[in-house]
Length: 416
Image (cartoon, rainbow, N blue to C red; front, side, top):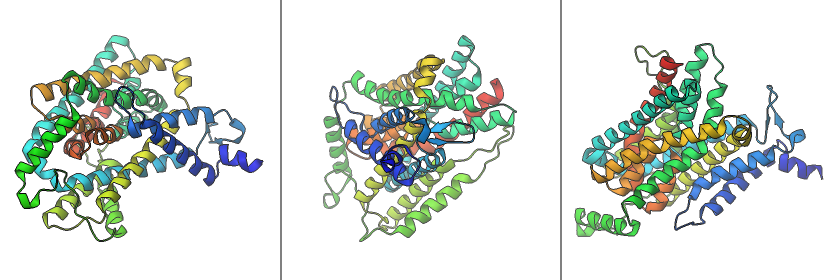
């Protein structure tokens, strides 16, 4: 029965495919279960990944062992590639979805949304600095907690690079990130739900208002029931899709040098493809050019991408998640991460809806975009039943990503 052991806990291609299929399928199934009328949707894939990785570590003799002696349920290099590729697929699909209405949405309320997103970003930084001085926790640990609490991997990478360039071991940032990330994902979604409960928002009534508003803006001959569809092509074309991804990766890799900052800032593998996809969607809509994918194909690409991304994050975090919480300061770090997640989102989210009159669907996307959190966007789109959260997400995402990367580096350079 050696083939069974190799399939279950080995390092073969079959094992890797089996793990991903198991984690994603079970996570999607469990994510459909509603508790109190609410469900986590695709986000549940993250927790199944954590559990699979943790319990997979119980078979050390047959697991992948790297040069540092670490044991892994799935090859870390494979996880790194699949995570980034899944994220690229997800954000590229989001860009194609929101592209046709992106610039119109930005003109109508983009400045206000971006200012609110900036407030969220700097509020989280302020909370992090206050906790640093109150608790005495080293800033590198706090930056790791911050990056996990707002689920920003590029910011973590930039901070790690800055700390390494100062001659330090940056592994502690990754550990703090992994511990705080899972509840960061949940906390962002809970913030969205909390605003809904606080103001008694009814999703069905909000959708009805949206349909009425869309019908009023459209001529009778162009009314389509209220849900804007991506123009369909006769068949999907792979060349435009992968050329777009190619251009996005190139754009995301271009370094931007800022005086006084030792490391260049980049849009990264998420920001670059998103920007290119938005431009492709907007340009195609302007000249009435069908997208290279049908509407359903774009949705499928989006869900596959976020599923792969969440599975990888869970499989990586699960290796040290329980150990850090039980034997180290991980539980305390988790609590601090929850504070960093919730305080800025609840304060700014409440002001956005009550004072600045941002509609709830756009607010969902703005909160997800300000934290650059794909799982929160996935949840928001599923809960809303329309693509309006995607527009709010894409409107604030580029600036939020830039600021998350910049502030993470500056916290290291100024306080470490």
